Image 1 (cartoon, rainbow, N blue to C red):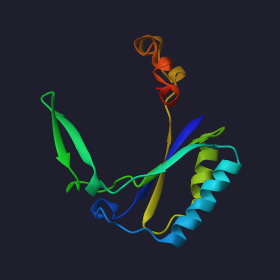
Image 2 (image 1 turned 60 degrees about the vertical axis):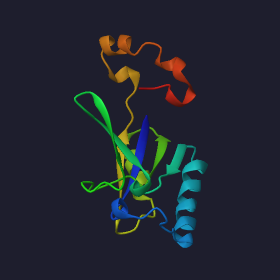
Image 3 (image 1 turned 30 degrees about the vertical axis):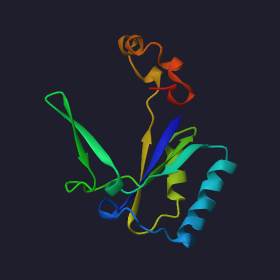
Image 4 (image 1 turned 135 degrees about the vertical axis):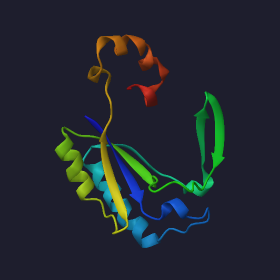
Amino acid sequence: MRFMMLMIPKGYETATPDVKLDPARVAEMMKYNEALQQAGVLITLDGLHPPSMGARVSFKDGKPLVTDGPFAEAKEVLGGYWMIDVASREEAISWAKKCPASDNEIVEVRQVQEMADFDPEVQAAAAGLDRLGAKSRRL
């Protein structure tokens, strides 16, 4: 079962583009990342620049509208993620609990949808998804 663990750092929604990372915290997080890898559960991981460097595309009346960050209405934003492959939800939560997160960080655990999770009609509508590339093999 694949799970995405989403890092939600409180306050990151207002971080400036030149936000500085604490090298000690990065080193601590790297130990955690290496533990995931050594356990054979890590698929991929990435950190994300703050929303002040991003954009949102909404679709009012079917027309795209681009809003540059930061986003005034945002209460929580992603700071990064890990994609892991484990046997159960409980195992994914166990890994999330081991994260060296600080008081102002939350790790949200979400199971990734697999094609088998859907009824045959949805599976038929998504036929060919496996040909889109190794990084997009599952819905």
